[in-house]
Length: 157
Image (cartoon, rainbow, N blue to C red; front, top):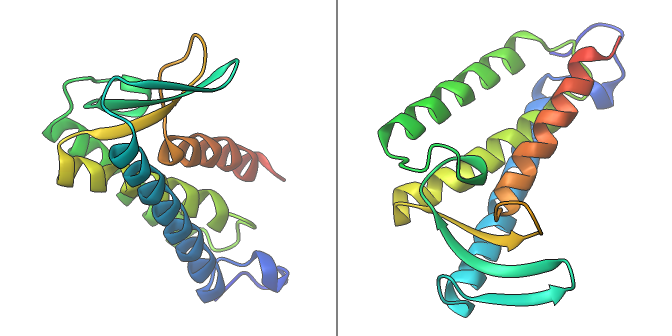
């Protein structure tokens, strides 16, 4: 159960797990839907300008976020699995942390969304391109937001 005295909406107990799971599933669904639309509608390497500073592209990324570790493969899968295990373990051991379910759901959803691509396609489909920034996808956005929110949750008194 959640921490004694914590408002019900912020406990990590069963409701926290359900919230984290709902966020995770929403991220995975949106991520996979957008990537499928890109794979079906934009050829690899093709670009479509949506706004003067935003392009839709089709990039096949074998690395992790923003192309880091571009060769991908088993090291990326192992690092991702280890990070997810640590996150879930921390989430399970700290039920007193209000709102911890939110970054947990975002990070799990983002990581699993990209992991599904790696297992199915051998690469991750990235499609949003901003000037002076590598292409990214919904899963990358979720991971980035998850890290930022996690820092706030952990630093919160």
